[in-house]
Image (spheres, rainbow, N blue to C red):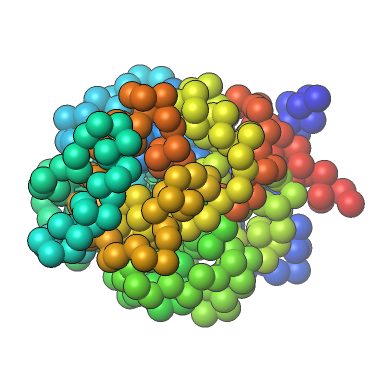
Length: 380
Ligand SMILES: Cc1cc2nc3c(=O)[nH]c(=O)nc-3n(C[C@H](O)[C@H](O)[C@H](O)COP(=O)(O)O)c2cc1C
């Protein structure tokens, strides 16, 4: 089925993705992006903290896409181990991803109210909510240990979610010739990314699975991926990577035609054997493929499969949620407790709104299938 990929050279395929032959400038940007990153196909594996693995990243990179590791939830030593493992599995380019959230201090009143509100959920399993919450994910902004790790391990690219790194961090990455990328969900965020001297914008639409990349969690333009790509193409000069709701090559090709230089897919890869998703998550992807955004799980809005968080927690009487990532500490503890009792209803099963189009394909086959579908649309 995938012979077509073998019959056409990678360069032919890459050149073909952008068929608007009279739009030389756009085509040039697109090719420049592939060349700059050293990849064959304009397809990125979305970094997915907790779900990414070295195997998954390497499979995507070895197949000509850009594999990635979501390291926002890892300690420096765990991150180092994952990076080294990935580099042992592939000599192709990979990208690393970190969180750049503004750290907030914990409001004790809000935390106490939240614990009280979730008490009945904990009590179902004979437990009490935790008395104190921890900042389980440090921000890349708060320390340079992760920066040092990136400089030491020299990935091709590094991306950031929830905000922009400090100027000295961007400069250090530039000096090391590491490509920088930041998620934007709005024109204002994209403009700030350009002004900061970042190389590539990841345009995340509202369909996207996982956390919204919004800089200010109370300000969300909620643009669809296609609308965001069109808006950014019109007003920004940086290359754009479209992310959100892309499950097949036809959707990917439409976004490239709108001006995206590459696409980034997360949900489509969660079901791959080499992802870290547990069995309950894998089953839910295929059996309950409906999503909703909530900030109850982590303290920041994120799209996931509808479960007890949306049904039993997001009720009209719900009080304010503690700040990210403190709320996530509570959310993870509730999930672990429920899961121990064979209840997987409190999992953070992140998924995009097009999850019902998910296919059971291993990573290399998925890349091949995406390429094939993109090429089919060139002929029609
Ligand atoms: C399971 C999962 C985990 C994610 N974790 C991260 C992450 O750690 N860092 C990040 O920048 N984006 C993360 N995202 C968002 C993706 O980068 C991307 O925006 C999204 O997957 C695109 O939408 P799609 O899931 O419909 O393909 C995650 C998405 C999913 C599905």
